Image 1 (cartoon, rainbow, N blue to C red):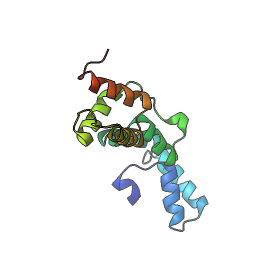
Image 2 (image 1 turned 135 degrees about the horizontal axis):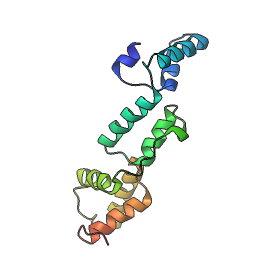
Image 3 (image 1 turned 90 degrees about the vertical axis):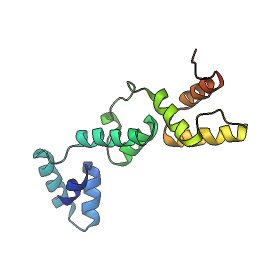
Image 4 (image 1 turned 135 degrees about the vertical axis):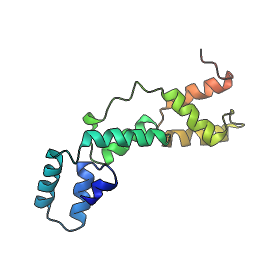
Amino acid sequence: MSYLALREHSQEELRQKLVHKGFPERLVNAVIEDFRDRGLQSDVRFVEVFTRSRLAKGFGAYRIRQELCQRGIDAGDVPEMGSLDWDHQLDQVYSRKFGGGMPASLKERAACQRYLLWRGFSGDQIHRLFRRLRQGGSEE
């Protein structure tokens, strides 16, 4: 119960933590089911909180989906994040990390692209960003 008092956890995270502590898996499954039935644990709530947290930290959709899957959330349960303004999110991350100007060399541009891909943005989004930077901020 103390794990859930600190932050939301997925069922799989709770399962792994409790089994790692040495509790029998049968008991762990029963406790998690009880928590879920009583509304103390919810994967839906976990996904919402986790997604908001990752967005606030400047991560893109691919990274958020990957991290949710690593935490035991089925890919079919991951919410569609297409309604978010990813270009705006990408602009904020880029300007915070690189200052907002166009990279001076191809080597710097490649480093920026690697960083943004690692953050979870798509190649298309990154190409649009550099197109906007070349055009002085106006998108066709």
